Length: 384
Ligand code: GLU
Image 1 (cartoon, rainbow, N blue to C red):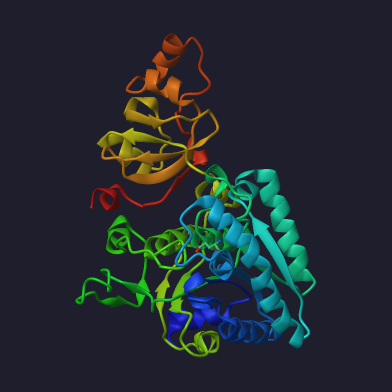
Image 2 (spheres, rainbow, N blue to C red):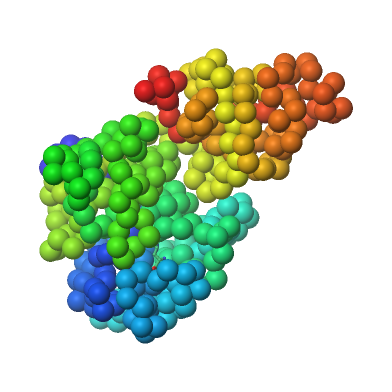
């Protein structure tokens, strides 16, 4: 077995497996045979002592036909209605297979709010923990029927990365309807090359993903890369494989070289920084000059108002913001010490001037270092 994969698989105790709509759906709805094969293999993994958390999409595609909708529903109420019909059907299909293996599956429906609120985040952790402790397999989906735009994960790729981080999984395994990651879009670029190993999800790698979306699911390769990036920050590698290939789970866990493996960052973030980077929803942008980009990215400094060239969006003190280079490309996420109106006033000014401008001062930093997480490692990488 190749050492990288071998090490990951040999040490694996807990895995989050995400299965996309394109894998478990047909044009007519839920692909029952596929669900059975997957659930059989998951039960086999559990029997070997591996803890599995399954993030399963497919609610909308399992329900839309009952509304007479062809293709993906267009309006949010249609999607929510389809999900309300499809979700219990998916759960019933899994439950029947799990019961044949004398195992119990549990439904966990989440909204982004459940994880971006720290107290509910910890509560969700305890619920997962208890289910796993009792040998129950959690089957997670977004609570599509009730979410509104502001509290949506939007796609299950990002949701699965957040669950993997929350539960400190050893691997995020994404079962997709494509073989893995290509350096271009294979559906319109015949020369696109398959990439079996990605050491880091850089902006360059992101740019290769293109914008193709899956026809049945919500995401495309871009949301999978975002998921791999998030999982990587949490110290978790991600493997993207084709979930429709025969016996895919068995073959992956036997160490067959399938799909694209994304390595985790060398240094795993602390629990609090993981929560900031992965689950807080940035509501604005702070753009920096070159010197400030280098100070924050290379020298591990806090972000001071003097290096800020622009403030975009509306946010309160304590909200998460994207910290960007001068072109607006994010390279870090942080918790703002001042709201957008205050930052607009103090941008470009020295710390000593803050009190004079605002009439008060919370602290010197616009974003304090302990509240800041880098997405890229170096200024050079940002400028590339
Ligand atoms: N939650 C959606 C569903 O169950 C899927 C979201 C996605 O495709 O990523 O249909």
